[in-house]
Length: 252
Image (cartoon, rainbow, N blue to C red):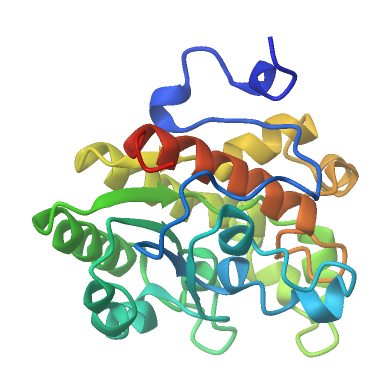
């Protein structure tokens, strides 16, 4: 069996749990089409890569997968839904791959509330999925990475010394962020669209959902603890390519 395919987790492909041992020089998608749109935030746009990973400035998962990149750094689904028509629907895509939620979940230190509530996040995500399904557009929803809490708290503590306390009653930032992933999982199941569980894939590859394991995995950046590394982007691109090739088997 091919080394990469050995990482395919038995019995979990239906929910998109797909692990790969992918190098930085992963080949581009076999589907070379401008009708597949990647829609997300900085972990899609890869806008941080030139500064944090200057050797891999363009190694974002849409570029690696060979699809159109419509990620915007800092975006929540409240912001994304406002540009949804222009950046997605107007392109008449054959498939859309979406990854949102990290910014939605972040707590405003002044109000003590998330930038987008869970109820609104589910509403926004559902609205976009249903609009795409009405057009018979293929949809892939993806969960977000496991945040490296220690790194994230340390980076933001200078501006907000109580950053750790904000998430203490939520089980920590990683658990809180994953609760938004649960909504993504729910929407995918309810509306019968493909799910790629990046969070579960990353944790499985790391060996556990701890800061130490996540750091050693090399999948999450060591500066903010909030972004995919080039290796992480490769993992995501592998999963995207896998499911696109299933959806469009004759588009090679």
